[in-house]
Length: 446
Image (cartoon, rainbow, N blue to C red):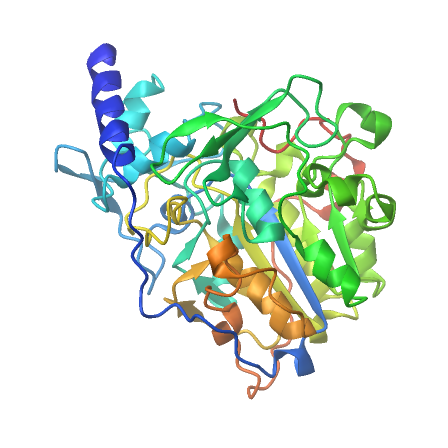
């Protein structure tokens, strides 16, 4: 049975990957940036990045969202989604080929083959997290904005997901984009000799790529530094942090890793964000990365993630910067879990399978579900609009911030600013301040 399942899974992957890819561009995605009043109100943008959860896995059954409590197997049979907790240690394959196979040309019915291939049974991926375990996320989503059409740049796992959240691209050149996770570790310029990456080409074929220390594309560090706009990347330590090793996307960017930004702007431990928020020390742009055990990653086996995110949001909401802050909570990839919405296919990279996204601010629309098609570049575009920054590069060169719909339509700057309401959670902030670092990256799946 398992051999047959692998054969079927491989057939779906092959079917999705062998023909030259022609993108489809929805009319709703703009091609030029337009000025917005966001910068008059927002002075801080905080991006909280969690791990490996599809939108359905987080928000199945959420009122007003496109998140039904059922899905379809590759045979066409409809099945009910089943509840799961954070406790299982099982992990699903969430690399490029399984994601393309699960997408199955927009049918969104290949997830069962991924489950069988993982030895977990065909219906395992058709699950949602029990609502009591994600209650803080639902509370935030109910009060502010839940974006139910947020898609990663690329099919696949965390490495390209995190890169695209700082660069809006993973392209090394017009024919190769970074995809999947590197083999070896830690990721980035600090990786051990012999570490290599994977790349995907316009035929959606995957091959071996270079060492993960890149100079081929611009990142937000370039534009923020050029405009003298402050930023911090709050990152967990790895392996005792010997030699300055942190789990940071910017470790993969040569100019940052070996320049002054690494010392000045890449901050560890990541819990420093709590004190910075409480004391009005937030920079203009922040990225917040969790410890492995707080990341929501399936195989982490803990329910700490929603409380960690709540601790960050509460620190901001109850601090002096609340009145001028926008918070975006996003999950970096689908994690192998079922989702029902076909991602628009804009180029050979993706878009990837839909993930959760919550937008929080005094000016975020209240009790609102946004159906706008967003991608990770939408977050970067919003940052550029707020701080008057130029795009990272043209769409023709692989950058997505110009083509993306900004998340600015999830704000209403004419409304009376919302007063912050404390987000209840299972664990207090002291849990995270007192816990020893796991010294594991939030996602190290091979």
